[in-house]
Length: 223
Image (cartoon, rainbow, N blue to C red):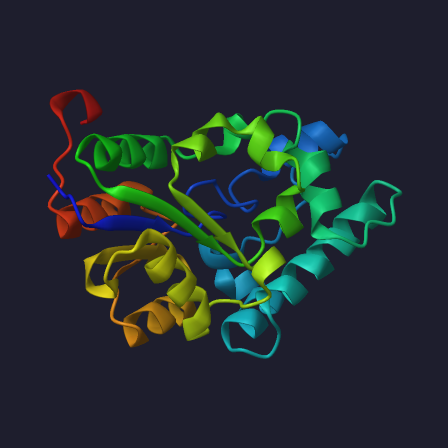
């Protein structure tokens, strides 16, 4: 059992599949020819200079996605200026289709073991819309959701992690934080959290590492 411990997850990329992984779905929904969207981020950094600029700190993650939003909008004759507009158009009708099955398994295992569950996101509502939580029942399983859309304090600032520590009432050392961005992992380490740098190319392994840190073992049904 992991009473007194918490699994703290980023949302985009960790719980949900990235937009890089769902190009085929996006193209179908938006009526684009297959293969139109070629930016691949972490799946092919060499072919995505804008992603490399974000990783090196020249632009923010929000800057990256705003540019991709504008580019995609132009392809479909729209003038989107907010990431929410892109995400809603691409996957808003049925958000459950882009949730990682590995995330569902790990969240269920942690909950059964008595762990607290939290989400720490820089832009949950900003990217997905204010009503997104109502359309994704999974989010009701979480004890705490901290979203910088509303707090104004973005990871990797220590204040973002303090919201989690104080909100859950659990020491930082008992929190396992999972994020796909190295800078956010570094921020969590600075406040004393245990961490897993999530590999979007191998989500199962990343979730297994997080559960191991919590002392949680999957049941046979969960693989």
